[in-house]
Image (tube, rainbow, N blue to C red; front, side):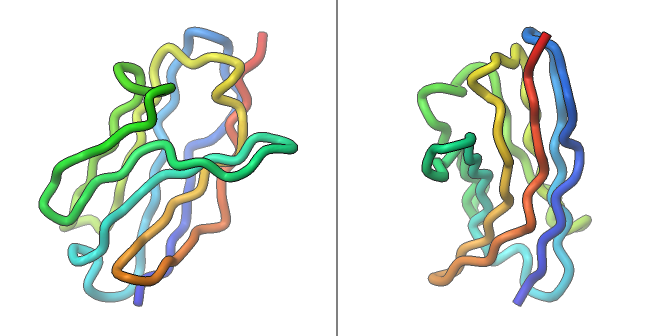
Length: 114
């Protein structure tokens, strides 16, 4: 089983960019589907992007064309490149690993504000 630690969050102006990282420890990282979720204040957690074991990806409509998810199995790390950020992207971003059960990181705060 893996453990997950997110990093890379912060305060950015609208139109700016951030890259989030999620580092995993433990074994069998390459066998997990990996996702980023986010939760805005007062809202439910929502799926942002997924990268599957085979490498294919899926995105929420709200981030298509702006965000890109990738994984480096050798480094046991996934990334979320976020461009053209909007205030609506503000929230806590969580890394998720799934292999029939879910494992969560502790989250990293992203704030988009002028």
